[in-house]
Image (cartoon, rainbow, N blue to C red):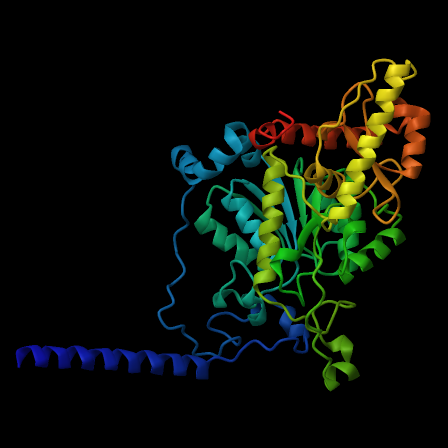
Amino acid sequence: REMSSARSEIAAFACGAAITAALGLYLNMKLSSPFELNRKVNDEDLKPSSLPSASGTAFGADFSPISAPEPPTKAIPKLSEEFRLEQLSRNVLFFGEEGMKKIRNSTVVVVGLGGVGSHAAHLLARSGVEKLILMDFDQVTLSSTNRHATATLRDVGTPKVAAVKRFLADAVPNCEVILVNEMFNTEAAAGVLDGHGKIDFVVDAIDDIPTKAQLVKACIDRKIPFLSSMGAACKADPTRMHIGDLRSAVRDALATKLRWHLKKLKVSIDDPLIRILYSSEKVVAELAPLTEEQKKEPKAFGTVENMRIRVLPVVGTMPAIMGMAISSFVLCELGEKPFNPTAAERLGKQVRHRMLQHIKNREGEVKEQIEKGTAVEGAVHGVEVDTGDVEYLMAELWRNRCLISGDRLGTSLELIKWDATKKATLSNLVLMSAKGMKEFAKVGKEGLKAEVVEQIERRLSLAREVEGRDEFKISSFS
């Protein structure tokens, strides 16, 4: 009887708790009044006093989240060096002490603190960057909390940059965060890019194309390394992400429009500083149609004149993945442990075999020339690559592009020895078009443009690193 009574009491308590929780959730939903997406913007909305808050108009006057903790009233102090190194211990193991020191001493600018930019910013700070400059003019909306890295319901109606800074103050108090709550333009560029000492990297997470083009130009003019995020909306496949240049971007409308805007600004889309993150997935959703009210009075909607009004469908995971990819790329660049992204589609088996056979044929000709005494002085012959290496060289190292002529896959391309006095190895084969081969044969490396030679040598040094790895040494060429 006593056991039965105890069980009854426990069951009654559980039922009561469930009813209380359900009632609380019901009241919470009834009392809240969601921030309307793409509503008309009035002058009063732009005044700080009218910004919705957790106790204001965004959720209803009586909004009080069930079990939501109160924000901390006391700032978390900076960690001592001992605790800071413990916080970064896994990163130190990856980058080494010198690489980690360079990351910590870096200054990174993130422009655009929406879904992509917020994820990039908070991961850069968590991973050791100790000075961030965050720039965005926009505010957190209720609909943006499905993809923003740090914003909570308490942040709705407040600047996105402030939401990120509040979060980082708790997570990474050692990171200095400078806020610029305004829209990027040519006038603002001077203050952001020139007014805070040396800028080591810029993350472009802007979704407005003319503004994005201005930032790209500003970085190129100042020779600041940067990575631009293309469109994250209307897509969902994380396996189609690529880091490459503007010419390699496919199935990305934002990249297409950006190319056009850069040409208007007289910026070469082949500039080696231009690196982008894009998805090659075909669009799987469409923009929301304009309402009748929006059609009649489009200027009354949105926050900034001439910016997009139609709403983009966004799976919250995509901006997060793109932000993480960006932060990974930036950290490896800053920590001097760069990787060479694969931006091209895989080569077919027949193409790889044909390319390898062409290399062997040319080396056979060199052998005959050596035997006849007609070869260039010091020439050697020999092939030390296979079809797997051909794919690496084409797609990963040279990204299906001849650096001498600028020609890409679709024209005739061959892997040519850079140094005739060495064998055809991973670190001595350069992808060239017929035009590039003709110029190389005519003037040699000494006659090529200095910047072209520098780019080629840099790529070949990456190939030498691959040759030095254990997994390469145990191949049949060791």
